[in-house]
Length: 256
Image (tube, rainbow, N blue to C red; front, top):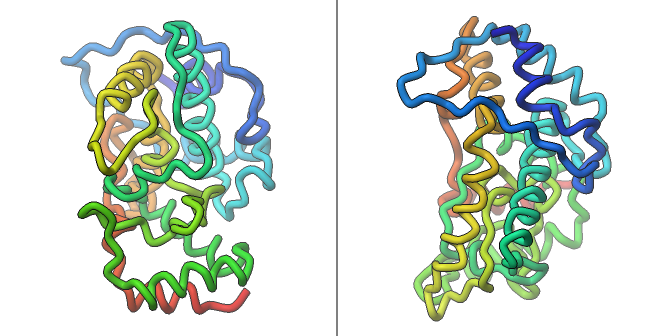
């Protein structure tokens, strides 16, 4: 299985990437994965070279990243999300997620891969408006142990209006999460999430190459490996809600 054929047939079969609002995907159902399938090893340099080539089509306004690889990964994730929404609509279900809906920013444990976290730092230091950084800084200083209904909030959440402060560079877990019922911290409702995740599985499981696999290959390359098991896990990651307050204060105090 060559890298080029894999990416073209199973990853980029939806056409050009143009940012978050990309051309609607036309997924060709990939051959169903077998549970006893041997690990697929891919040559890292060749694989990432292909990914970076696709990254030239990424919208810099929609994906303001230093890494074109991550731009491709997140563009894929967004398009998969759109396909999940279409799948739900075909079953007369509607995704309830909307601006200001921030319950998931309290109760989910959001992990960012090493590459994603580097882009979050770059976004805060070099892209984020000073006024927004001040809001996030004030939250850390004034309410260091902020909790609501027993859940601590993501430090990048603007609590006043439920807005994500790093929305353009939010990591894969945020791009893959959804519900057909507006989440509530008070009620602890999860049935809407389960319905969404079932539709998500219907879309992503048949894909042999998933966004997380590209992150896996990238992280293995940074460890100096020549080949990577494409069906492995991305590796070391950062839990956003567990970042120490001192580091957050230093980050939000940085000057553009």
